[in-house]
Structures are given as structure tokens and as C-alpha cells.
Length: 88
Image (cartoon, rainbow, N blue to C red):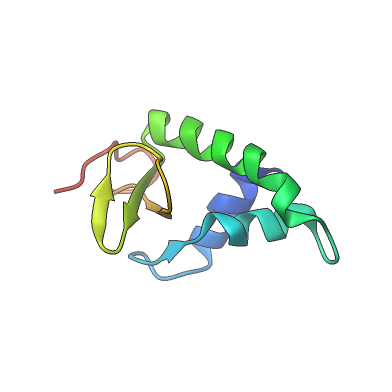
């Protein structure tokens, strides 16, 4: 499973307003006993692409982030996968 698929699968398995940590995505990508830290650059790249497409939104401690910087959580875009970067 690639980083995009793993992100969307984790989000789909949770409540609509739930978030996931990028390290959770990396652990899925790396698999059991995998080197998940090595998967983090791919996870970040996939998150950046999905953010640009409006497929996800980012936050940290409940505050929206316009771009990935420092620690962050990943959530579904408002209004579904194609909901854009609406933080309101």
C-alpha cells in the first residue's frame, strides 16, 4: 500500500472528524516489523500532494495549518475528498 492509499484508508476507518498522525501512515506503509521512519519522506510527499489537491486538510492542536510544517495531523477535507482547503 502506498502513502496516499494508506492515508485515505486510515481516514476512512475513523469518524468523519477524526485525524491521523503521519507516523501512523508510515507504519502502515512499512508493514509489520518495517522501518517506518524511512517511509516518512514518502508520507510527507503524499500529504503535500493531497493537500494541494484539496483531498485532505492539516491541523495541529486543533488549529488549521495551510501547509505542512512541523508536527501535524491529517484530516479529511471538509465536504468529502474533493472539498478543497476549506477550514471554516
